[in-house]
Image (cartoon, helix red, strand yellow):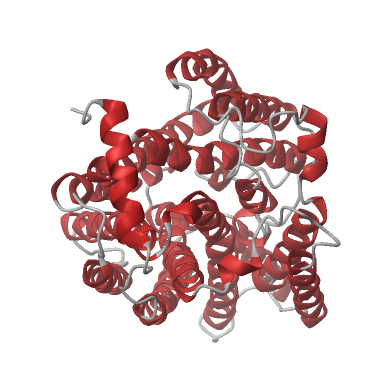
Length: 500
């Protein structure tokens, strides 16, 4: 994301990927998550996904056209999605319920550390070596190559190599059972929706096409004629707790992604920082995210019980942190206060996810936990696409309106063609703001500031709505849950020696 701010527009297109791209690679992040939710052979999944990531990164690094670039991101995103969903299944299989929250928090901490390091690295390398070399993508590929054997030998067998009724299945029979039509319709529906919502003017034909594709997807998933193993079982979606938890987590993470994606924009355009400094601004929020999941998992989530109230409380604090960020996203606000606000935002979002997952596992039967976990990963994967696309659509439309109002209010004297060209460049490059002088710079800074504030306020409103959605999940466990939980806990303790 930080690399994109360096603007490879002259090589690929004149529209900014920051504003205009519907982020197809993130949508592909979501599609395969449900593919791997039922595949308990974790090692095979992890190794295969890492190979996809390596191949995608190499294609991205060597791309000379937009099509090649997007293909590379799709492959890398597909591999990342498998890793993303499989990690939760590994935690559920290898950890007792007492320590489940702690290890989920550890996962969030590790992932967030990578996000923070990547942003800083990209911000530091891209200005020095330029976009042409695309060094940041070449660096990632050998890292994945080294990680592959490490993960292969470190993940213990899960006991899922032989599933009842499927011992004789070959690899090709497993491939034949995959719900390809469901994947195609869901991904197509998401892409058309993202494209329409991220455009400067909303094309309603794409919205209608997206709605039609969603309807077709539901028909495919609910009919055994089309698939025997739907990627999103309709019976699971009929559960109020599962559906509302997925929607609320997806919505809240959309707000979170809007913050993540545009924090560097604030630093570069409003503060006048370099891209490297724009990446550094993400450290406090990522540190908060890392600590949030870890601390609540270590201190509070110690039992398999309801965390209904805790989930709602941290959701409220997340919304308040967003409101504070919206108010202080100015050129002269205190850096310490801003760092505190984005730290709290990251902390509460991670705490929310940990509480919400633990609560969802409490209100669903143990037999459905793997499916529910994969479904939740799908909602959260989509949140990155929707958060950046919808947030980018709002941001770009407001920014364009503010720039036009500023440059056409009579205080700026230039030819009409010159103003239009300047507006077009400013829409695509936040780094251009501080290359301007006088009235032009002040107008651009004000426009960026107002656009960011509007987008953050929309994120606040979305968080309030998602808090009410989460409140509708309820706190009651299934009738047979207590008995099943006791039995499973005994099995875990016997198999792990009470897991010290």
